[in-house]
Amino acid sequence: MENCSGTLACPYNLTEEELKRGLDNYGSLKLIFSVVLAVMMILVMFSLGCTMDIKKLRSHIRRPWGIAVGLLCQYGLMPLIAYLLAISFSLPPVQAVTVLIMGCSPGGTFSNLFTYWADGDIDLSISMTTCSSITAVGMMPLCLYLYTRSWDFGQTLTVPYHTIGITLLSLLVPVAFGIFVNFKWPKQSKIILRVGSTVGVLLLVVVVVAGGILIKGSWNVDSPLLLISFTFPLMGHVFGFLLALLAHQPWKRCRTISIETGTQNIQLCSAMLQLSFNSEQMAQVFTFPLSYGLFQVLNAFFIISVHQTYKRLCKKKPEEKDLDCNEVSELKETATGSEATSFLERDEEASVNL
Image 1 (spheres, rainbow, N blue to C red):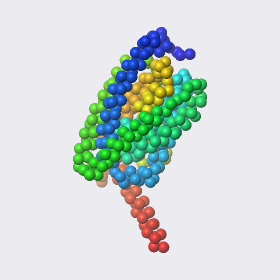
Image 2 (cartoon, rainbow, N blue to C red):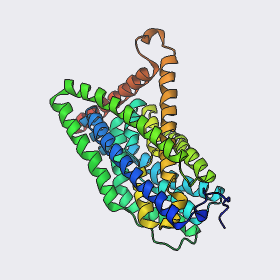
Image 3 (cartoon, one colour):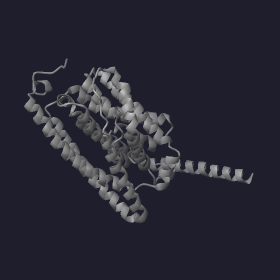
Image 4 (cartoon, rainbow, N blue to C red):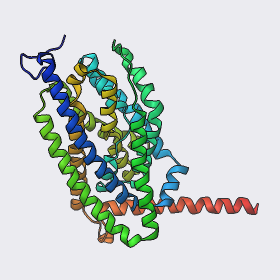
């Protein structure tokens, strides 16, 4: 039984006409959101492509340890957290499956912009987003099959493969153009990066404001789902960081994996809900992707603010007074990597001489 009050906030107290009108309004607002997010995605990914280094990208592909840890967080941690949250809040089947769909979704492209602001590894971030979107073709159905068996849902969930394809195209094509521009015109690419990051900030502000208005004016407000939409991305960030730390990843990669883990593909989750649920079921959960998207942006802003504040307040060492703490640590990581590379090269030369 649904625990609904006697107000119109409960979908079961709505008339069929009110229910249809609300979903129609949601469809129109979703179209506006989709256009805004598409424009933001293209501009941001094109500008971030201008920062990518081919050598670093190849190193991530040849030694995909960071990508492997990210995929473990994406399809190991997030579905498990979603399942535990659904159990803890005793959600009804429709709402529980909605939370699981969000947890089983691949990483979102917002994470690439957040990684840039958090001084993370852009090459690893884009690689993780690409790999998680590709593996979503098989991992989403598998995870949903394993976790939804706890509820008598009685419906077939439809994975929107076309949305996954569109996500990959909107990710890879702008990034490829950005890499080409950075290779041909490195000076102009820096200007493009500044413009793209500024436009990304403005569009994110628009999304946050619009999302807040939509959630506030929504006629379907469910406190457990709102609480989950706040805690879920935050838990993804925290546990993703801890798992990366346990895997002995550098701090820069830990930040990247943390942001990637808590940032989900909202458009893919919304598309799957529309394909799998009827109007009455959608009335219970259609605001959850919006609230999750809003809170994941706010949580990411909090993480970025803490990191940037730490950078400014970090005490500088006397012998390295011209460098901040993060730059010093990155130089040490680079030096360590160079020593390991030179050692391997000497070892290869020795083997050849023998």
